[in-house]
Amino acid sequence: MFNSVILIGRTVEDLNVVTLDSGLKTCRMTLACQRSFKNQETGEYETDFIPIQLWSVVAEAAGQNCKKGSTVAVKARLITRTIETEGVKLRNIEVVGERVIFINLKTDDGV
Image (tube, rainbow, N blue to C red; front, top):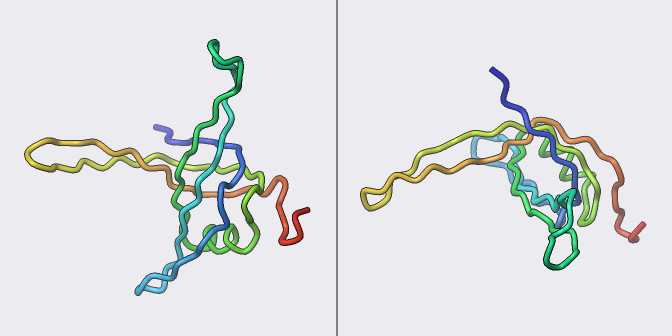
């Protein structure tokens, strides 16, 4: 079995790394990924905004290096959770980043 996703896009905000009570570091990255085809009605490329959860040293490295607009590649895996509310079962799919490759990093001076 193989559970792997590779996403390439730009970060939509500066990352905020949080240290949990257990000492584990985590952050949430939202990646703007442009689709490879144009919308037939508008003639424009559409963009998907994908939330990715990062943990441990991956979260630390991304938090130190990524600014809004940085281009990165993320190797990730999908996890599913079933949530039951008011008798209705809902399935939620989350993206957990396992590796971040820095392609073009933005700096504080805009370069």
